[in-house]
Amino acid sequence: MTAFAEQEDVEFVLTDKHFRIIAKIIREEAGIALSPIKTTLVYSRLTKRLRALELESFQQYCDIISDPKNKEERRHLLSALTTNVTHFFREPHHFKHLADVTGPSLIDRARRGERVRLWSAACSSGQEPYSLALTLLKLAPDLADTNLKILATDIDPKILDQARNGEYEKSLLEKIPGDLRARYFSRVTGNGELRVISDEVKSLISFRTLNLVRPWPVSGPFDAVFCRNVVIYFDEKTEQKVWSQFSNVIAPNGHLYIGHSERVTGPASNVLLPDGVTIYKNSC
Ligand SMILES: C[S@@+](CC[C@H](N)C(=O)[O-])C[C@H]1O[C@@H](n2cnc3c(N)ncnc32)[C@H](O)[C@@H]1O
Image (cartoon, rainbow, N blue to C red):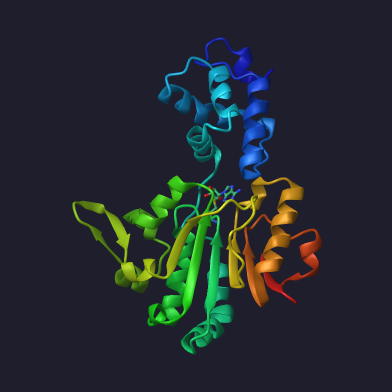
C-alpha cells in the first residue's frame, strides 16, 4: 500500500490500485512513465482536482478518468501531472550555437526566399520558442519578411494558451539580453509587473497542440528542432521511437537540441550524430 493509504489523517486515500490506474492512463495518453516514487506528487496535484469536482474519493476520480469519453477530465489529469518548468534562454549554450553556427546560414537561406523551419517540440509556456525567435531576430531584425517560421507544440492546450498570450512576470525576463528586452517587450496596461512580447515576435511562431507519442501531423523537413526536457519523462522504448521520428523529419545537416540530462539512443543514434553538448546533426 502507498503511504497515503496507510495514513489515517489524510483527506483522501490513494491506494496502489488507484496509483496504477492513474499511471496507466498517463502512460497511454502522454507516454509518461510515473514510478511509485511520484506518489506524493500525484497525491498533491490530484487532490486539487478531487476538490474541484467535489468528489469524495480517488476511486470516484479513477472511475471518471477510466472512461475514455471523459476527455475533458483526462486533459485536466495531464495538465496536473506534467511538469512545465521552463525559462527564457534555458541551457544558454544552445542559443549560442544557434546564433554562431546554425542561425547565420538559415537566415541567408531565408533571405534568399528559401523555406526555413524550426520546431520547438514540448514548448511549455513559450519561453523556448520565443528565445529561438529572439536569438534569430538579433541576427536579422528583418526576419518577419522572410520565409522562416517556428512551429511550437505541446501536448497541453492550457499551457499553449499561456504561450500564445506571451505575457510574463517582469522578473522572468532577467535572462533576456537587455537590448532584446527593451525592443520586443512592453508593459501590460493595468499591471506594472507584467510584460508582453511584441506581435512581431509572435508572428514568427505557430503554436499547435501535438502529442509526441501519437502520430505527428507534421512532415518537415525541419532545419532545427529543440526537443528539450520532455523525453526524460518517457520510458526507453518510447524515447527511442521519438528520436527515430525526429531523424525522419530533420533535414540533412539539420540540428537537434535536447535537454541536459537526455541522450539520443537506439537506431536514431546512427543518423543523428553528436555535434556539441546535447546537440546532434542529421548526417544523412
Ligand atoms: C519540462 S517542460 C520543457 C519545456 C522546454 N522544452 C524547456 O526545456 O524548457 C516539458 C513539457 O513537455 C510537455 N509534454 C509532456 N508530455 C508530452 C507529450 N507526450 N507530447 C508533447 N509534449 C509533452 C509538457 O506539457 C511540458 O510543457
